Length: 433
Image (cartoon, rainbow, N blue to C red; front, side, top):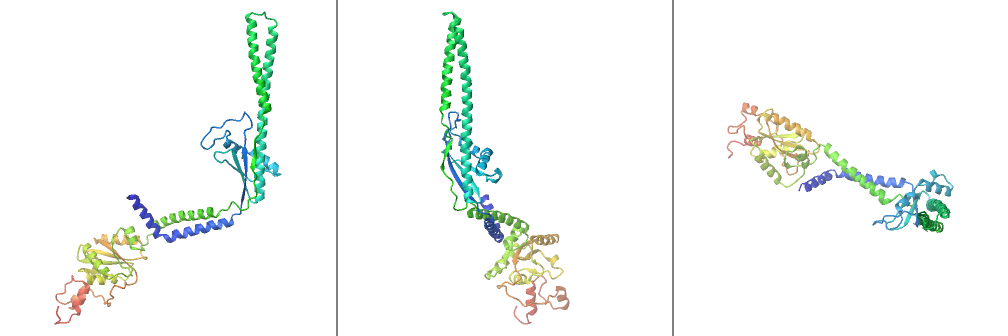
């Protein structure tokens, strides 16, 4: 349940800041396209090389689900990218090593094939370098195999010479030993062992001399590519859009956390924690004021209600006068110096888009110091809603002046609403009450 609530909050935040989010996404996509246009084209040529065993000295490879060949092609791929092969390829091209482009070698699963790829600005140059790297790798592999086999042949031949020398010594010693003596039997046994060793070494030497060195062959020659491999439209556009989306989301979160301006009624409840009793920011049905009056009456702890407008130049009478007619409360608009001390509760009339939550919090604290609780907020704009009946403006007369001049009729209590007092004042004598 909490994860769904968090998701709704995130989506609501993005909906509030959709313009910033869309702007960042569009900017990111545009930047990706611009970067693609500025990036020079590059061409990739690939040569396929079939790698073959070069002799019995080839180290065995552990068979896995990825590699089922006897050769360890991952090692061969690293050899193909080595500096030795790069130097040999540069010499074949008649360049220095710094003038050649780097090579990329990949190994398809369950195969004995190396993909030797080179990316360059010119398609023909890319194909030439890829072929040069393939030939340099095969030549290096052949030389390494021949060198290794020569070293093994030399080692076997040296051991064979030692065995043959031992056989000669045994044969010479047999001439001076009596037949049937223990020394003669031991010498004969040693001669047999040395003869068997010599035969094994001779067979091994002959095998090394007759091994065919086949390092591999090119099975697919690199051809100049017809279309560039980079820049890629999906890659640049997708990267730009994703970067814009991430940047826009981060900017929307930062903007939402730093922005304290109240633009909607949802912002009022979210940033101030005060309940919204009514929204007069857009024209609606005529029952809105009735519902607002019911909510105010049920929430007001006393009979005197102070309507506090934020900002101060907001048309506060657009709320105070209809409430005075609809609600059985003394609605105070703050024009009298005694309104703040007489008020039992307060309703804040907040102008959307003109007030921040910091200003609302300051007003709430100021009213709290005078022990006037805030029961809720009514949101509005500068324009008077169409469903609010416009009343004729009346000059404000302090209550004390009305009593002193005798204009306040007998029976009109000071606890009546300003609109009720106005109706009593305008009623002629003899009219029915």
